[in-house]
Image (cartoon, rainbow, N blue to C red; front, top):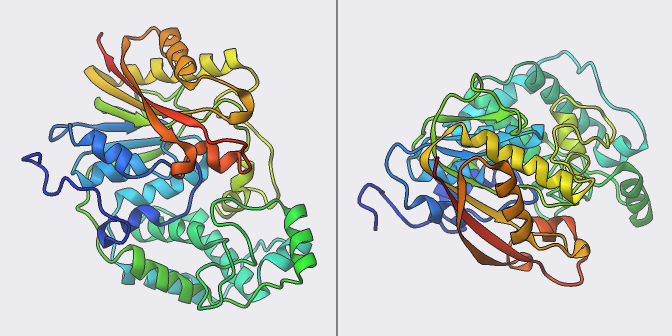
Length: 377
């Protein structure tokens, strides 16, 4: 046990204090115990950084251990979810905010049209979703609205259920949004029609579940930015710990696979195949160069002796050595990071890892690695 920790055990799956971390299903996430166990070595007041934060699992682990942290990601969906990991709010306040928005008589100005939208949501449910979208894109500064936004992203799409509904859409995956063409073909083939769902009822059920018990609030924030270019004006903290999992070489679908959630955040009502702000995936050399730029940039925010812990792997189709790629990127950064250890982290099939989320039909599981480096400048 560590003396300054109130509890050095990661919350179990059904422990209420850990439920906020699951406010929104997300792909490419590593398990909470990974950053939590690393941070058990941290000292009180150590700042923690995740430059590829995803849904903010590292930051939630830091919060559980009463450590301040910063989350950075270029994906708007990621930072919207991660932002909720920093706030404290009671479930009734979130429900009250949602109810107040839905009670407004004015109809939403923008309701998407077309076959996909008619088959994905019941007209009444879509009206309510659009009303919430319009209000939250205009103003999402309060804790209640930040959590409501993340919660809605989590229930925006998912599987149909025989019991009371937990998601707002027609049949769809939870972690990524099916593209319009395949979704329409599937729904028509299966003769599936979207049920009429009371959005407030689902929000209420989910809010009282994920917010039933929260860890004490700590300092920190989530920042939507490119970690290769983030400025001292945006991040003024000095970090002792960097714990992260960068995108793997060859992954190009972060934004398109979250297109429906990006729409809810104010984006277009169709899929955009863009790579703006994403780590280069067109070649191995470009990938290594881009990743090196991140290690070099974040080194300027870190204290001497800071720890860099990276979980990394590779897509099975590319036949890459993840340890070698990561070593090359750190050497190319030439910024003082010295690799201390590289250890096997198990195979992607053993958890919700990047490889098994993006390569949904793989011939074999991918061996991932954990790299530990120390800043010696």
